[in-house]
Length: 143
Image 1: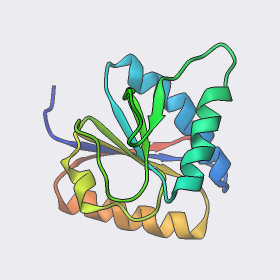
Image 2: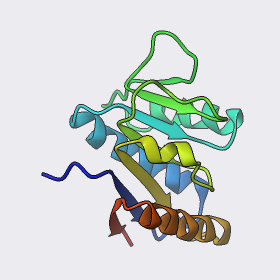
Image 3: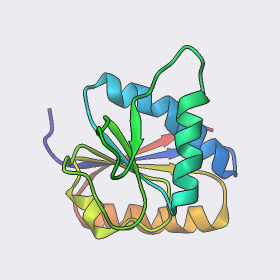
């Protein structure tokens, strides 16, 4: 098994922010099933609150343990905004645009790409950054 850091780009057919968050909800269960911790970066505190609500209610038969950054107790999934990062370096999910250099410290980066011009442009730039940094790249076309 490779120990090289990796980046996964999930390409969706949809073009809206809600689809990105819904896909993250599904994906988060799979990542947690692997025993990994997740940091999901959103653009601002308002979107963090929306994602928090979505994780609580997205599936009635499911529980996805999560918390907003700075909350105690901590949870396997942390929703953050701004520059604060968690102590772990397992999985970084980018639901913003530009991938910050600090994200490259994580073992796995996840980009959820929807068909929105700004997101497509940012994702292309993030892909180049990951490629230039030597990450193992995986493109997953979900269309």
